[in-house]
Image (cartoon, rainbow over all chains, first blue to last red; front, side, top):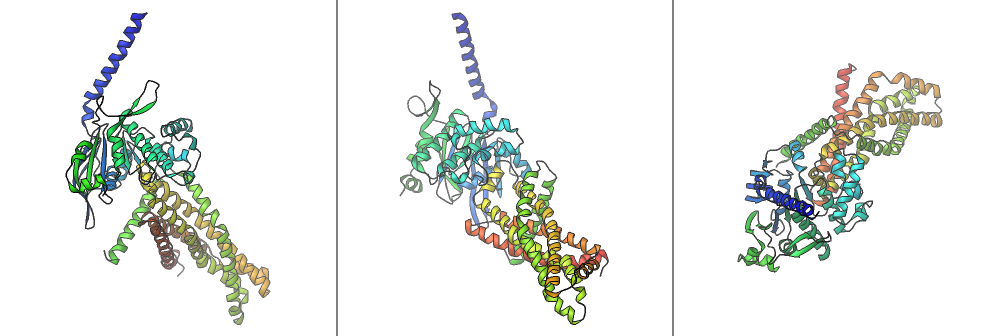
Length: 296
Length: 254
């Protein structure tokens, strides 16, 4: 009996190790989830993005920092194909989307979840219908839609609000419903456009925790656009794990684990002025970065 | 960009929008339930104003024309004049203008609000084409509703004219009705249906285009709503002139 148990647990460990190594060695993971190559975008005379190049690898979170009007949100619109670059190339999961038509982009967008600044919930639809929007559009039967919507609302801790209308929700709740809506269909790329702007610190922390859960437990690649430094502190120094009771807990990086799946990129007037880890960012001597970090 | 270039660009974008909306009608998914909901909002919702507009327009036509016709001894032709004026011109044009004011402004404001609150971007990000989901059902609803509303306005206008003629000027009911029958020809009825179809395209595409091109927050929504109503009203009146002439040529009534 005991030999049987041993042999079963050995098989599980071997399978787990194999799958882990397989995942790490998967050549598909070397293809960036998102890549910008020398992207230039201007509106009339105003240059928004100036020769921008960067990559977001699979399972990585790229935090894009910068002041208002620096071109941060434009990057997200380019990834979604809501805008087209004047020059350069945008790749999503290795696919060049620069010249894609609206119909072709509809297929690409199915891989991407997008969380908007104010949630951008559809006013005329209930929370349930907002979260179920993508599934309803795909013609998924209602008996499959409801469990999926409830699963997503549980993920953002808002199952009780399922029948409410967006007008009845607080700012933080709207963003969380927006996150639930973005995660339907389990996209492997999630884009956050200033999701914590204007929120109180505990609610902002909740939103960051959701981003961390996606990164660490769901292997999601994401771009997290923000200008709030506490977002950076949370996402770059903490990680999500499941404890022995099956609960998700957040631990600080340290001797046990050093986070390498979160990178920071800082933008100013359409150019990247910093790219690297948060530790390097804090040691940067650029006056603009120092002022941004200090807040004055 | 100068005025002419801006105008041409606007014309191009509005035409492209109409073409894409039409293509969307024949592709899956078809938003039939949205189209029916829009028909309810546009058609059923406009009934009250169309009933009032039609009835009183017919009434005032009788009030204005009866004394003149009487001075020529042609008061028996009041029904003829009221019916022809309504079916050929006033019914389609007044109906289109009323619908522009009520529905065109609502479409533009609704789509404009969705643009400024990023709901349109969210829809595209979720893999849904807003032109097929929002513009095509509204165009369909207008194409079905406006001709029906126009027919209703014509009927109620003639009824209003009859009530006024009989009650105020003691015109015999049978004389009025027989003049109406003599006045309306098949060509008038064809024109009375073709015009609302063209007007509904004008109102729909202009309102949707103005709404979807909203910029500048809530102030922008107000601006695009005003622009939608003014532009659609002017284009309806200009189109009416050319349609009237074209229909005369096509139907051989010139």
